[in-house]
Image 1 (cartoon, rainbow, N blue to C red):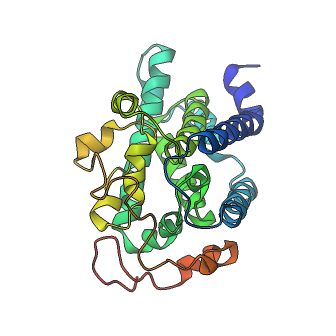
Image 2 (cartoon, rainbow, N blue to C red):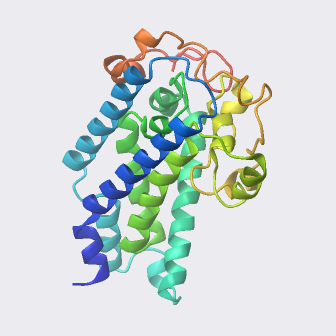
Length: 280
């Protein structure tokens, strides 16, 4: 059995082990060294956020049986994609595949803030009134399905191996939970770490109620795209302990439970990310 086929066959187990392991580690870190006090019920938020990820997983498995890794095998078999048509060492193709997919996710994230229809889906992620490890997995099922479709199209064009795709998806899931963690990092460590990976101190700015701040720091894995594209903001204006998390028009916790979150995209959006009034 080839490495690609082995990874594809065991992909669900690989993804679950990393997901569960990182979730537990980050939850323990948040208990031992929290960065900010929570403002709402943790139990209620966790029930909603973990319920959403369960629905997301079921939706993807039922609707998109092949997913991105399966697309990678299909693309490789047909000789499609840039990386399948250049002569490079396998390890370099894996690195380029991961970097290319990460750039696509950065651009997708920026697009979900820029276009009203996509913002309807993505704003659910920003309605969390606190910021912790489960915020990193709080995405509407329709956004997850759309994101998977974009990722599969990117795989068809880029041509990364199934190994690169699974590595990227495991990395994306792990770093999303890490950089949404309500954890305390010494400033000196954060300053160095954010040169290589998006840290909680960097990404927390993106969850501010301030429009300029939540339209910055779109990266999930690597911090370089924000710096290159001019969307990087080092710190929130009011500081990490003084900033307000969430969206200004969604402040009632009773309207942010699982049923409400699932129907949120079907309501008018109120304030659009640009700060203008939009009914899209």
